[in-house]
Length: 415
View 1 (cartoon, rainbow, N blue to C red):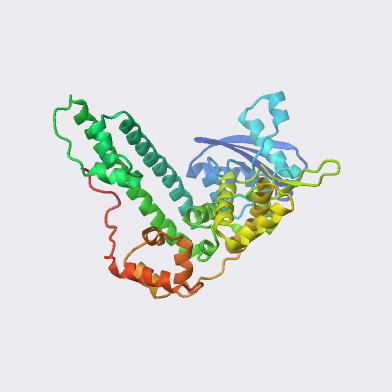
View 2 (view 1 turned 135 degrees about the vertical axis):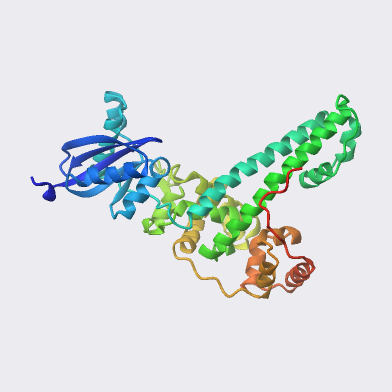
């Protein structure tokens, strides 16, 4: 058969430094395989290699979210149909081992057989920004927690003269008090060395704290632009909203139905009936971080949302357990989130409160913390979706008392 009439499928096994490519025909015949470097010239070589056999129906790529991310972007820009291969053929591995050519051919065979058909995330749009910001945020949060835990552990065994000064202080107040100390004396003295270490830990604590504030401000701006009304849903804050945006990705059209979104976030019910008992359980598959975010939304609503509390009371009377109620609520929450994520509604015009806050470079989270309110409460007030004269007056008074915030330096000067 002439090459111009041959239709082929390619499979690609991706690694940090090299990618192995295998090409098969539309009937499953193995044609050739070759290894290429994971560089720009290597990507061009892959395209020339697979197109040299004929019309390319699809390319099955392993690791589209890691080693194959840039390759997937390049192939997509070239107009090729890229398919994500998530699970290799385990039986073939047991029988033949795990050489790169075998993995590449198995990827191509998976596409041909229909076992692989998922569209990978594009990772080329605005949603890539919150993904990397969240990765930074996770490490900054862990660093701050580690510093706080170490400071408290040292205080537990510190002399009473030191412990007495900080007894009863909560974490932020404790760090603020420690950073203002001026230890004096010989380093060999236990009191001096303990006080010095505690001060240095408090200084270290400020760096991830400032970093987290900057990250949250950037996430706030991205969410305002790309999902303006998502955080107006009860229980949805910056942390939950940014995670859900990352889960859906830059090409949400790949999640074609609300049921597929439910499966993606692991809340699609699975039949678990037996005999005369009819019941369902949640899927253990899907994006577990997104599932965790939805679980958080449900817990918040069970405590604060009147609709949810009424629903919980009714289901308890029907004999449902707490776990079963949460499973049902997760499915309902996923339905609400899908509408805002896949079909976002434009935000109403910002009112004077939001304009005043933006002019002073204050985040919604900062205002909410100062007023001891949920960010969603202030957001709805700013957008005119809710009305509360008392909160409005408190918010307005607080804004008028604030001086404009500046963020000229990303990190504080070294001590």
